[in-house]
Figure 1: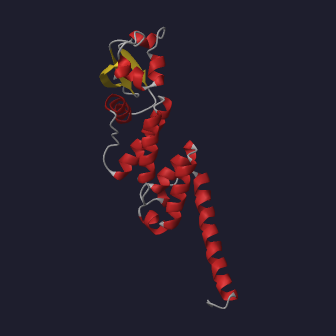
Figure 2: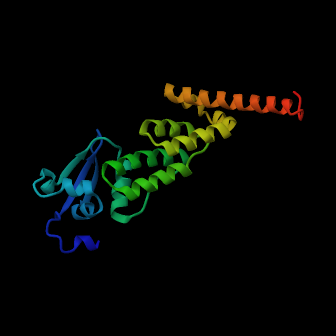
Length: 198
């Protein structure tokens, strides 16, 4: 809040965001607080920009709940990912993309952490596909390892049926074949050492 004091270049007043195709409203948000919390908003509401004096700004590429969570974070420093394992993972994905777009690095890191913590049987495959799409190597590796280590639980949760990306499916098949080869190699090695015969 200290950054809002003494800076004559900060815009004054409130803005209402019209979110998504249905133009759902996020009303009466302080422009100057948004500006001190996000470089993107600082530019958007900067001197010479049409949004500086606008009462309404349209935001098309997200949903109301995720954009509201972004605004709430900027105003309160509290992360709201909703309720339920699947919903939290989905919200963290969308909110992470918004945090990247609106240049809020701390929120982006919090969302990445939440995603890593939300990997489970029901979320591993959708998160794996999202990590592949976003180029998030760390989350991708974590999800691949989880699927390999908990294949039965992932399958029972419907994770296999959730696969939509052929590239990810090929990658998982490759992982499974590698594991089979490792198991066969271990069995052959044991036979060669005379320890175990199958």
